[in-house]
Length: 435
Image (cartoon, rainbow, N blue to C red; front, side, top):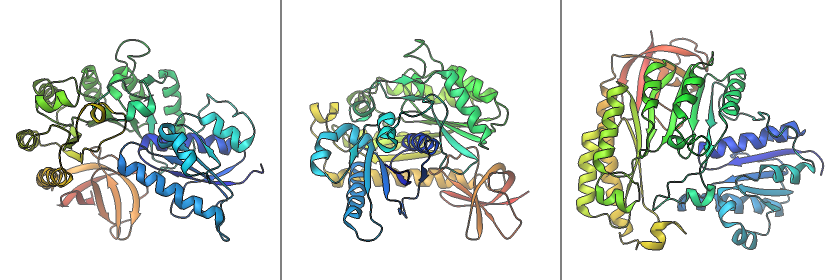
């Protein structure tokens, strides 16, 4: 096959995006030119990296595949080859092969080597070398430290897609972090399906504190942020590392899902409300001022109105800095789909979701208003219209609050840090001026 331009569409989470960047890097090394522009696909060859986590994500992936398969019949902007990889094809490959025969090749989530062979006809060179083509702004990137999850929560399909938890070697991760720094990356967002278990499968002990401590000592990395910790068997030593290093952001993303013992048991979270509350207390005591981001679920089978009322009151009491929520959906093969009845009507799920998010919206508005008059170190991500758009250490790219600085005041450099005094606050955005 002649070497050509390749469009790659990456759907779903940042962990998928890292996989896409590895594929792009290896294809670039093989002489291809890869693009990541889902809004304007023009190349004759396309790879779609799919998501299969929940119903909405699966629907988006299927619709994207179908839309691109139509290009194979088009007389203009015709697509010659279409390849699909990732979570959706990992889980549903036989069914998809039958339903969408226009796809030229289906590959699993971890089948990097065979997709390279299909496109190049050759084995990838230096498979262990860092070969990523970054698609994020050059000043930040994601570092995926493990794959898979052993937790087997009742509602979650991730273990069915990714398999058991598998930690990446620490030396390999440190080398990748140094490579990222050499590319101009100043901010590393450490990600995994389950950060808390890093090292348990290889050394039978928690290695996340050591990894973050060593990452923090790499000169030139100015921010390190942690995403997707698990509350059960949380490595408390990590809190000392966060408190110790100024370049480890006072930020922790830890999905809690619910608060009552009844629901935590049904969800198979292997933790009690008291243990969970005590963990939150320890985190806040040992890392003063830490920003806690969490995710909560409503409408799981068995959730009573009393459970939901308790969840609302608990959310008011905990006052999380950042919170996302979603309604339960029945996922094939999960414990809940096999053993529970999806007994809560969809309108009830959506009502509960709206009520919970209204509570968080008020909390967010109050927490943001308290920042007016304070000065924060802000990294500038982009210029958009009349404003530069940046973030504090308490805000992760794409998902959290932004700081807007008037572009008329002075010219700022994308990727640089500035001291910004907050002049105005909205529910999810701050406005400020350069000191």
